[in-house]
Length: 394
Image (cartoon, rainbow, N blue to C red):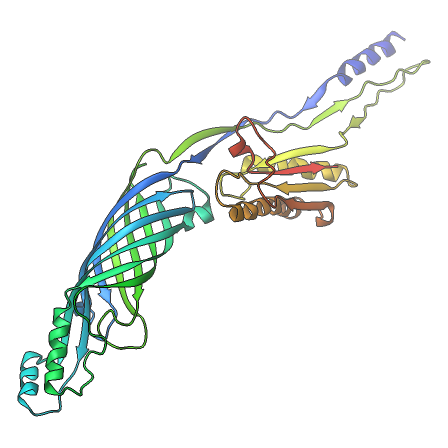
């Protein structure tokens, strides 16, 4: 009997222990975006669309811009481009008068002339950061790729070469069409443009960059009638300076979630204790919050541990289902971007459960926020915590 009592005491002592896995906590780096102003100075070349040879339509070009980066994805800038554009035309007279001979002497290259005219072009551009949209916000990344669209005005003057050329054609024969859109003085025209820019980071404030932009105006810009828009293209290189600190860098400590298994105390048999047994009691529900980096729906290695916890719980409890609801931080990005991010985060968790752990889609309810009225976390760090997919198994 003493032996049985000793065994019973030992079993009770072991049954009172809570068995839990103790994985190591891990750390990751996250960035909080701060809106900033920037200035940019660029120089390069401009090619005007025309029928002439490439080199003779090429001119020097400059651009200075001031802008505001409102979010990791969106920026607006006001810029002024300036220098010269080039026009060209080829005409060879068939007349035999003195004016025709003077024209041939003045323009011996088959009657082709290249004329230039000066301009300044203030424009407003909206920029979209493709790199952050695809890879998530990381201000310490080596390079960023932006696309942009803009609208502005082209203020041109100094079209003397075109006017001289047109006058000599008209002197040969006043009935000749000449340059049908000839202009003189100063003219202001609406300008639209599209472009792309690649910036290389030197440090937190300085970047080197290259930019290509295509500008289009009405058909009267180069003095010739073509029944389509006139174009000029700029390839620029320069420096960009950002004022102040554009981000805050934080090291986030990810505490692992622990699944506890409680071993119950055995019940003593009144007559004689013959054996010791233990029963594992699992909780009826489980919640895991899977957190994401800013502007990302990729599940990190640390957060994938939580997805595995969910899968193991659901396999141990085959009658359960999981509700997955995605959210985004309303203080970053637009409503449309945040609604899409929230949906992508919920779907990322669902896909991981199916692909990595074989959980059936029939056991999932996938949802996401439709507006920004509700944010699940208010403190201590709502910006970070609301980038989450909340998973409840029951």
